[in-house]
Image (cartoon, rainbow, N blue to C red; front, side, top):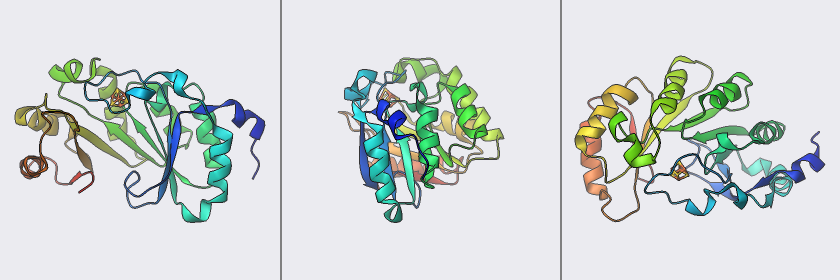
Length: 228
Ligand code: SF4
């Protein structure tokens, strides 16, 4: 495989998980975490990597390890933090392309220009976009307005090149009406909506989540609850 390892050594990542069975639908995947994020979700579990200075691990080491274990992997997931704020994202994706693994990008959607570019450059095979709240609660949940995420959402809903899923973490700041509004105005028409439990005090318990999912299926037929 032809890859400039010296260049890869200059790129640093925050961490990686050698194998995940739940981060790429139906695939065995490694997950690479890039530090730095342009949101401040009140429930964030990755606070330790919100600051880009936490990217300290050589990407070359990760790439070499992946290249040795290709036969046990189908895919690699680029997650964060928020990967689209990372200046070397294109280099990382291009290097991973050379390994022949499927590539999934996890994004909060605040950089529609970057999402569009990686799709058009055929650098990703799957995208997971976070839709975190209805418009009037986006700032309350994430600290930022919704408009850039909507731009990314509308782009994904109209392009035909890359399959995608939408993901929502069930913040206790969202009520049933918020979720219905999201289902009708943002999510509807999408193939897959993944809902995940929030792990903070006051979070919805699993039995309540199951009840909510039954209600939301009136608007979006295919809903999965992550981890169930
Ligand atoms: S988008 Fe993800 S990493 Fe960024 S603040 Fe929200 S939960 Fe944390």
